[in-house]
Length: 142
Image 1: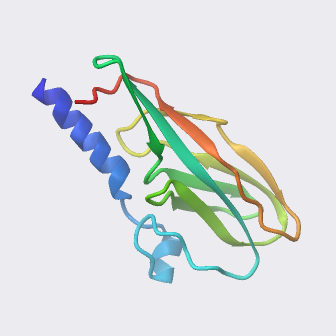
Image 2: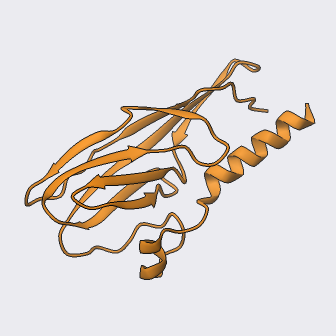
């Protein structure tokens, strides 16, 4: 029982802490997981929400996906993490085609819907590129 509690505490700590910052965040002086200041160009943004089910307690937790690594590919590449509200932004992008993909933080096993999003930037910001995540393995909420 204490082993499960330790694993959950470790998992929650990893998701909530944000980890280390990206090169872009460090260059801009931002803290890990903190959104970068507005830059010239356009942005892609959205929110990640999580739903975790605990079969042991038959309970469901729903809330923001904090510290989720987000990857941008296509016309340029970048990585950021979601903030305390589950929001992410890729600022300063040129017009072009991009793919946004969430990934699992260390030691956490999530599935995301959709698995990725294709985004076309053409002269304006694009928002509401949202993702929903849920646990793949049972999580023991105590």
